[in-house]
Length: 348
Ligand code: SAH
Image 1: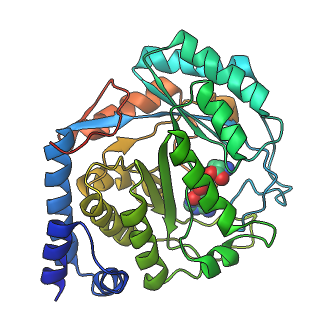
Image 2: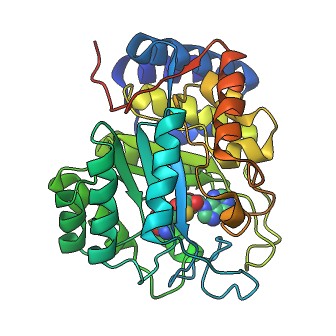
């Protein structure tokens, strides 16, 4: 049964939602190894041994939202708030350029300070200084007009995890004022405007079962995102989900392999959360089919304040250290960090 499902998935890049659920429910170490082998072969056939890097700049931890899982939710009064100014953000990008980054990800809470005007000015300044680089935004939900303005200013990509493709589950992870429909609307608007779009979800988020995961996989199969960020849920001590158990390494790796088979050219990061739940999490992520890593380019002085979950790694190091640490980790598994924008490739 399991072997058959894997064969079908590898050949058709598709399963029914029900079969995705069976594939998850029947997970064995042997099936995981089989999927990882196929996923890495496929990754290599498209991208060789190159692993793409994105320099992550955490520009603000102010957030108007109150997602129940997130350490920078507005109700967390223990969180020390900060935001970087335009100059600081641009200088992080300058530093990253020298280190070999050709993509910068500006991520933050939904901070009303970052109006279109302010954000567009920063995007166009970075683009003017580094025209060979891609800019990715990950600033949450905005209006279509805002997405359009930012794209016009030079933003190339947008990351907005859908968090869960199941409406009832979405409502258990978010307060009432947040809307599943608006999140999905954003993803579709971004695609129509011409962004390369990333979605994604947490593995092992509270109330998630294989049924919700199967729905996430079907959504990914249908939406065919350019990027897909998945990492384990990890609780944060100052959130309502403080006592919820984390997602597991094994299930995250299994899903990474499945996603590579569903959408072969997808840009798939081995996330910081994966590196947080296991010391070799990111290496294992690459060995399961991922092909992107996102080292931190934020000033060291703010890193400990961008705590989405407890014990987040890489909060004490300089950017150069972060990059060289990851280069070493990738070399240890026969991969190299590319100095490249790392756009999605179509299959050969
Ligand atoms: N405000 C932006 C960026 C959010 S932070 C936005 O809405 O897109 C980036 C991602 O971190 C989130 O999409 C979420 O999936 C993840 N995240 C938040 N809290 C987490 C936790 N406790 N454990 C693991 N991942 C978490």
